[in-house]
Image 1 (cartoon, rainbow, N blue to C red):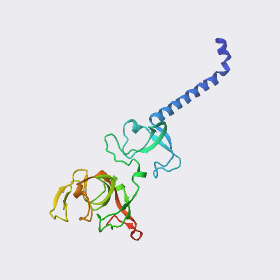
Image 2 (image 1 turned 120 degrees about the vertical axis):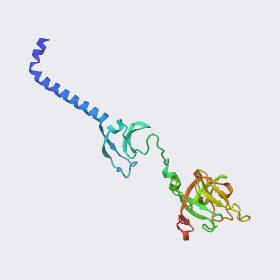
Image 3 (image 1 turned 90 degrees about the vertical axis):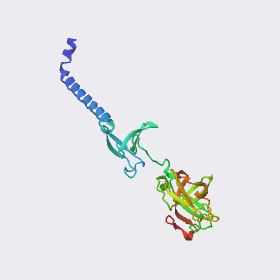
Image 4 (image 1 turned 180 degrees about the horizontal axis):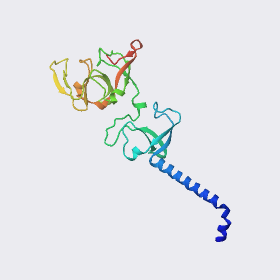
Length: 244
């Protein structure tokens, strides 16, 4: 063994330097590992999901990890996370709700909240909407976010036959007191009711020929499919229709 060490004599300085550099590199890797695991890390984002905040092209960001370790993430923060459906992938999203928060969301805005075209026909909305068939656009965003107001014209599923659609005007919202005449053709005695929680009171503009809340009572808000806002046909009447 002594002979071996004597033979290594000329290489001892080189070995010493190599050992010191190995220790230094190891310390560097340990520092980088601890830093990337517990303090800060690099992340590349690409794709359309965070437009317009983050561009479509690839972007390089630093993500700090101290806030997440101490539960300091807040609504509005942009975070990086493992894809819950494919842990090999990473996602970048904005925090919208935390533990205990009530979150209202649209599961498929591309299909559920784009304007819907509906044909109306019949006498119940005379004189606002003519007897002949008319083509309207109904927008769904207002109904999703509870922005329907008294006076709005809405489309809804018939509460007595969900296969059919109706077009009526909102007369009362949850908690409102509504006075109406159930059968104006034969009786002019008014009746008063309070719209229950989660309901709306809907009537046709033609009080003498409309099957509405006076017939089937308050309608659950969830049956409203959209709010009328644009007339398409006939072409000579094309234009906005939200203030009629």
